[in-house]
Image (cartoon, rainbow, N blue to C red; front, side):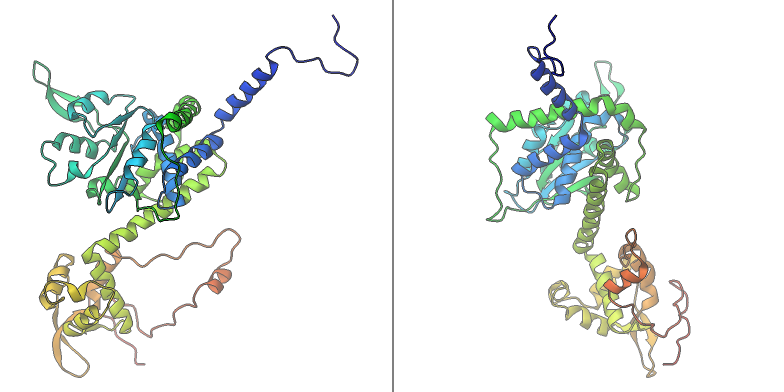
Length: 426
């Protein structure tokens, strides 16, 4: 057999190039970093999301749907916006072509959903979710209960079923994306990765979503996710990732971080950065939208402006609150915040005005700073400064930040309900 001239490689046989290309494609499809990068780019072409972190979160949420049987929690994706036309339905269009076993529930009977969910559950996609939870929900109580319960494994819904009318446990565990106008109930938002959609600005462009070419592109990415993550389900089940958040936020984000850790590369750090940014954004959002929390925060600011005095007369506190042009207190009620409103808003925190003798010997109704300490710590804690980055000294950190606040010249104040400590003479 002639093997050619010495020192020369044999000529490739028929189909060798095709086999090499197929092998390279198979390796590429098994590279989680590449698959996630391409999925992220594709999603970003079709929708404008609120931030880069939100785009990362949606990408990981889609991928996590492909390992649902290995997960202990099924995070919700809350796609909310203030009005129509914010891109909520387009997000669901993209999800429908990329998640594992999509099931649109806008016109689906709750009984069907109960029976479809099993060991390998579908990914529920719910448009117009505000109609399920709003005052016009009507007979959708079963679906609402399913969506509330299905965040955690082993939370079945019991129903009377069959001709013998036996009590039957229906599994509820399934990932779900819910799109609607306005915030969804706290029971959903607390268990969700939240996308706060906005209308596109004039300069923001997206690719048109056309079934003829958009669906095949996205379906190809879906198939690659399945090929990559399918064999890794048992590995994912054993992973206990280090989380940057705690409690329910950790439960919700853990599946996304698991996918990122399976992919490796830049995805583990990118996932954790998105987790921190988006959970912090929700904390800020809650503070801004909760009136009582806003009141606590504004009262703390007034006390700080007054040098953290021991007490403030009710009328002085009210005047300071109403004078803040950015606060809602000047327009609260019919004529602005008054003493009755203030006492009523603070009553749930165990805070009430009392007679207080001031330095001039006069008595007046006043609010003692001590009364607020517990509520401030629980509902609007002061932000914790970030830890120094690797190799960054505390001195370098302080050099970049504002200089430390000088001592106030007072001893620490006792716990809520106790007497104030003695004040030093200035």
